[in-house]
Image (cartoon, rainbow, N blue to C red; front, side, top):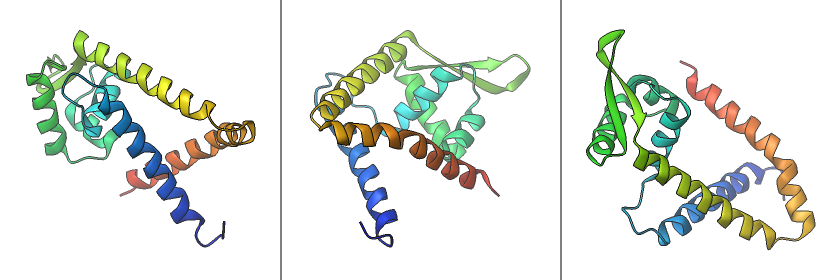
Length: 151
């Protein structure tokens, strides 16, 4: 792979993997298929119960009104609970419903099984290369997050 084409090829590969995993996970679902932003917000609320809407928007690098609309949908669909923040009655805190927790667990289990199946089909050299690339990919993610957080 030529050094000048590496960044584009890496980006294309990452997008392709993510898109195809999402598509495969949606294929076998019997409930409404979650959008990427829904899963991201639900995962964030699961990891940080009580997070506020504006803080979630900042963390997800989305517009506040977009997250607010998404929150309204997920509350209406029984996936999120919006509570008034006792410290600031104007602010809301977000919590997962039991149904959303079960939905995320199912999604994670299905994703892990799918990726495990696909990785198992690779030869040992490719599996090792992917395993060794994980720390660098995490650093790349952190660099992207830091740049997105800069004013």
